Image 1 (spheres, rainbow, N blue to C red):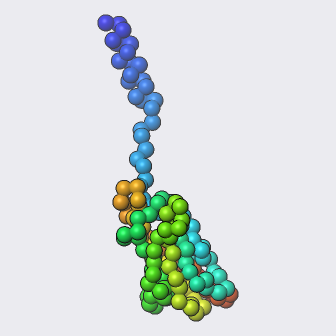
Image 2: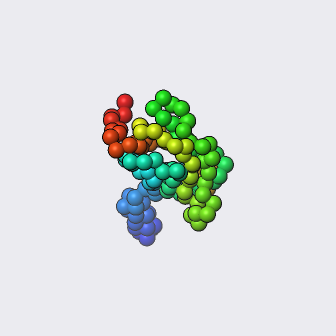
Length: 135
């Protein structure tokens, strides 16, 4: 009887000392980009590149670049880079961009379990461009 009480006490102690398991985050989140988020570049590149924290699936993952008026300024060819062995890179071609602030809207679908995520970030074009405060 003493053995069972000691074993039960040990089990309770180990349960209390063991931290709760963490839930895995299965969302492909923004990692970095070129141009970088909240950066200003002198001249717009011909292509926007965005890396994510997890492998992406092609269906449903997309990028969109809009100007300050909400007009789309990319070429509409958003895609997961299939030459990236990790499949974490998305690309979209940019039309020639005037000086100003641009917003990138992204949607990612994780290859891990199909969970989707979305978000946005800004970048500026032109040496005299300032991003200002987001309202």
